[in-house]
Image (cartoon, rainbow, N blue to C red; front, side, top):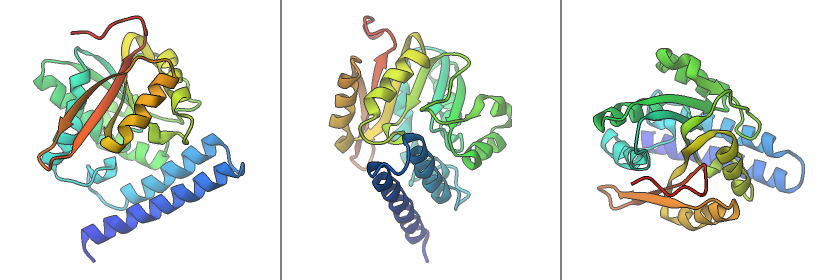
Length: 233
């Protein structure tokens, strides 16, 4: 079997497990937190089936496409500061962002939060110098010991309908005053529901976007922790 076949099968197994958890949640058989654990464990099983840094980060593509698809996150990061990645997986993203930020003369002190303990352990193994900055916990109830200048997350880490409450929780609990909450990168089909979630949370939404060499456009939607502040130039 080819790598493409194996990865397609792994994605299908993960999606089937997530769909089953979503159905159980809708029937009231599990809680939001149990749904998050089941969904994350399903993804982790797929990611850890290979020893590939990008695949373990949930990305199926080469190094060039990875940078095109993720590097533009820094277009929403105007200055140095601390950066927390929620859903950090094996830590490859924060490792790359730190390097890419240096090229822009931006110094990022990077942190990760990962629900699946096996992925968190892999992140600590890969990045021993950051081991104390890789946390294991569920974003729905994990309480940070500090706030961060920038917090990145994806809305796939909570059940449908809970996105606005996650945005509100992160803005008020995780992000420093005047800091930024980033959601993404997201695909074009996720743009409208993401903007709707920000609106439902009462968070003014700004965005950056990038189109890779295959013609695919992705977006990062962001907001400031203080809704009365305008975005920095």
